[in-house]
Amino acid sequence: MSRMPLTMVRVGDINIIQKVGGKEETRKFLENLGFVVGAEVAVLSIIGGNVIVSIKDSRIAINSDMAKHIMVSIK
Image 1: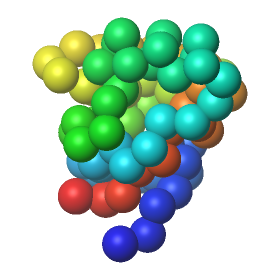
Image 2 (image 1 turned 180 degrees about the vertical axis):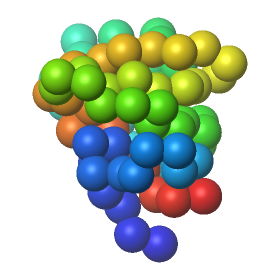
Image 3 (image 1 turned 90 degrees about the vertical axis):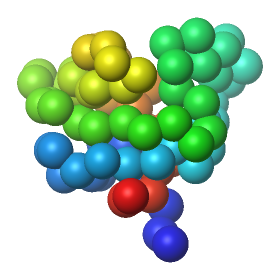
Image 4 (image 1 turned 120 degrees about the horizontal axis):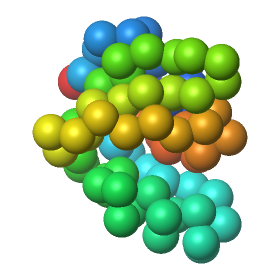
């Protein structure tokens, strides 16, 4: 199973979070939004450097800097 950053996945694919990297404050921030290992996440769209995702029944926009710290594999 290959891992890739969230910025590299195709829009609409359902992915499983494998790892959340980055500085501790970035990891905590993402964790609080629901980006935890094992969670399902789907990219809805990528607009102007922001990644709009669906996670835990919510739509969340994060910038591409944060998105590249989220490693996922395709479900």
